[in-house]
View 1 (tube, rainbow, N blue to C red):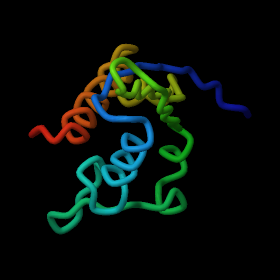
View 2 (cartoon, rainbow, N blue to C red):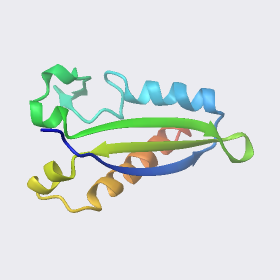
View 3 (cartoon, rainbow, N blue to C red):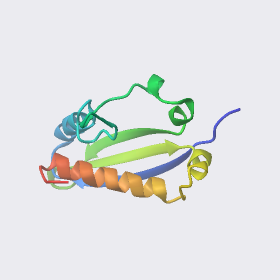
View 4 (cartoon, rainbow, N blue to C red):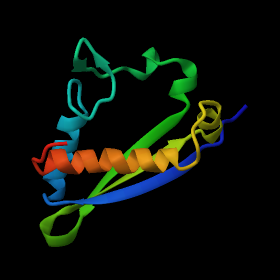
Length: 117
């Protein structure tokens, strides 16, 4: 049976050029980077999708876009496709994904612009 995915999207302005923003995003989300959510032994780690339980592999997928923004900055736009049914089973409301994206982008903006979390 096919899974129906919903989509949430948000954007933030970052005060660095698009190429630099993309580099910072990669630095932030790579293995051990502060943007990774899984911690093992006090250090963030990248986890291959094959290592995740089946229900989590199908729960969400995202894409980030880096577009020229205001004053030589960048608009970082994040789209997250998610399984609404899986979130409801986990007890999360419909606004949980949007709040999560906004928090993630705010944390990234602070990192990219050299500010503390």
